[in-house]
Image (cartoon, rainbow, N blue to C red; front, side, top):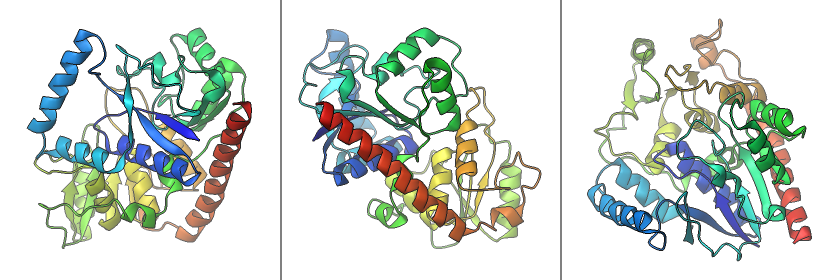
Length: 351
């Protein structure tokens, strides 16, 4: 089956890694998989072509920094379509695909400027569409509710990543949809070791804290105190002097002695590699995205790992029951993969 993935493509570790994970899973289910190329096209209108040229020059400019590391990860690990899909231009070469998989990540977050109706693929036949672990990233839809409901109803098979997302779909369409694992959790730690790369310019021989805080770093002192108490250095992924792409991100998460983060995917990689995890609530002007952690912690019985909890402490951070985690992960993987397989078989039958 020729399959296409429709997802966000941005300079974001979790986004690139979930794209790779979904591609890997679909390939393992006997699919010829491509990710629909986003951005600007040399075949589109003049504005799009000019931006495509600018983007190509930008790749040369950034080849030695983190943006270049992201570009290398994509070139080495993601199979992109020759066709391009953007707000300005949609390729006519989409009929070759038997299946379109929307997701994962926050493809349906209405607060993202780069998201649009395209993320629902209104231009392809409805019977070819599946949404796997799609996320709204927020707890409710307050604008364009009727149109969003129409777009959702055009997708016959929907699964979401968070319970809040399932409630949104229920509220807008009346449909009950399952909550499934983020694609990154469908792969094992061993699977991820195949793409992980040790950063070249960081001394990782000494034990360290893997720190990745996307919001305001108001917990810097608390993280430093944790590191000092355990005699750990801190590797801060947000340090702009470091050249870190998705492959280096995976390596650091796998080899840190402790993960301190407000990131969903950093938390996922900590768990997959059985690392002590401290989740700090994100402090920013963006909409509340805590529903992602609600689903993650509820699904895996994680208590006391979030700074918002009264029992948040070193005892809970370092006291995870990994046997229980693995038992839950095995069952959730099976359920998630079964949903994906069943949905794909129905698409194939309808086709």
